[in-house]
Image (cartoon, rainbow, N blue to C red):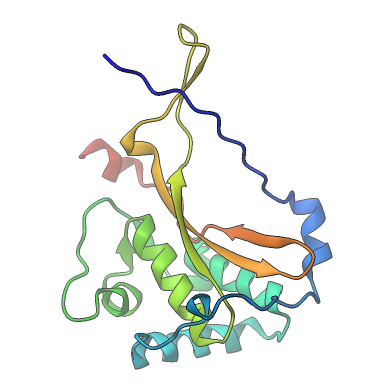
Length: 178
């Protein structure tokens, strides 16, 4: 058994400080974080509809609304987390957004990134690990493949890249069958 030890530091802006982002603009970033060359018309249409429903032109509020559209049933309409991939065809992200409304974190994060970019809001897909299990014996968290996760990051002037997680809470039924 070969163990790898590493230290992870997360800096997530507390909700009490998020009000400072309102009115701030996204800063200029490399063009690849704005690329919309492969965003389908379906994804662009959904992005415009959701952005319009937000009722705001403030970038932070729009991004937060889109995140909530995925995670809060009253705003989005029954998106569900599943580890099973039902999104197939030539545009699996559009299938996810319009038809199945079910997928794993990579679908939620990818869809949100494409939606934001189609609204001219720079965004990037971030991947890493969420959670883990504390091990008293090791005196550290044990992080496994099942803890892998994807989320979205958006740059704001004076604050840097801010994380947004559009993945709704996991279904216990789904987890029990994997």
